[in-house]
Length: 250
Image (cartoon, rainbow, N blue to C red; front, side, top):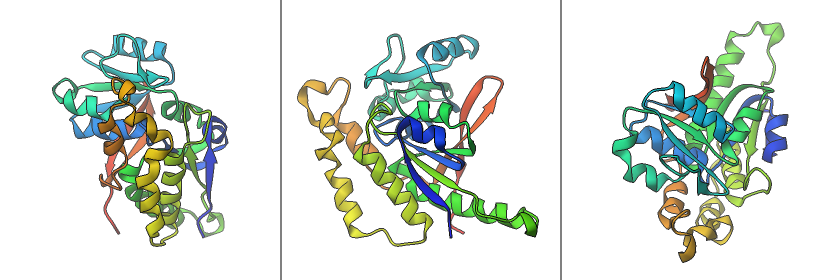
């Protein structure tokens, strides 16, 4: 049996143990997938706007990506928008992206109790579950028999600004748990995914909010398991970074 918990918001990130998946569908960890798809050499998630700007000073040629309350941070190259990233691919290619958001990156910097951190979105939900199953098997096989036990898995649905639960993050956490347990995804999940436009997804269909919440972002973020890789968080002298790791079915 897999010891898997679904946790919520900033407190959930702080409670996470074992392998933690920090989930932010709209839009942080969808954006990080698209940054890599558009040729970013590395993505570095940070907690604050000030840290992002300071890091940009010491990494030549880096770009700044991020938002607060969904609006692009002043002076940043991009907001937290996948459609902006795709349209600005020439500016992304071959560069380090420094990324800060209201929810997703806050989860990363607060998951201090986790032994391993992954990011999660609907775009790579199946790959995340496959990777975790493979990692759990690898950890079990390498441990002495007397030390073998269940490594906990913490699925943290970060929600809206890490303050209120969001249907898309809760759904993604359930997707990953269902895949982890080796079960078939029920048809109701597809219906719930399509209905996300009736919850926090509504902002992407408001004509007055298109500058910051373009409708195209919604459709780009709700694609199911489009990318066969995980983004695993590491740390070096500059801080956190996400590492793209291809995942194949075993």
